[in-house]
Length: 313
Image (cartoon, rainbow, N blue to C red):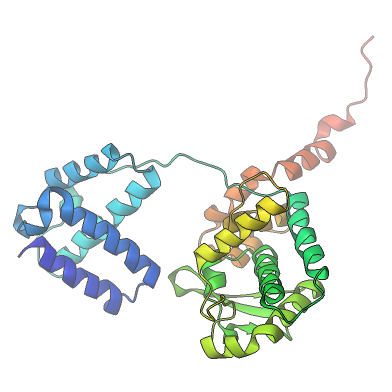
């Protein structure tokens, strides 16, 4: 049986039996296609695959200068594919069982924004909003939407993909509660407590209520369709530049800042884990490494050396 035939069966398995998300399926599609195109593997019979062919393919990924994180993902997809083949008895045993693969990713700390930078962007946006005299034009409505997007990113720490997928039924403006569907379709609930943020969300909904009810998605674009992740990235990039911030800002940096600023306020890391939707506490603990302000405060106020009071004569 040729590789391209069983790859097709595996894709069906991932979509309809494992019910993987659209984004995951797209990643699988890219990685499986790349594997098939390598040395025309797609036309090989499955009996021809052994650990040497897989090692050859993995080596090619390094030669293409992919980042370690990307290589790790691509290998994981191929490994999942061969595990499926073994389980379905298409092959006797997966070649990965005879391989020891260790792909080490460089440990990079998440990039965050300083609180003064977040304040600067929001202050600029609200000032721009107040300058409008005609609130019926689309540019005003779009600005209110943009403010709502940035406020939500900072207020909840949600991923940009989660924000773009919020549906009308997932948000209760009166109670200030948002139901978020995260990775692996895991749901969590987070509250909006700030009155100014609630007010902005309410104004946005009033301006776009008809379009929202039609599309079912809470955040929409000029074409009255679901707003895209790329649109949010470009939006933030635009406001970063015109508000005078030199640092390159991404939507995910609001998430990182949300976590580190809460840590600085002494919030228990397990609460932050739940709000971010991390399945493992170890993922959340990376924020303790970037929390230098809290570290300095602790060492200044708690370290016993501060109580040493002697004079050397």
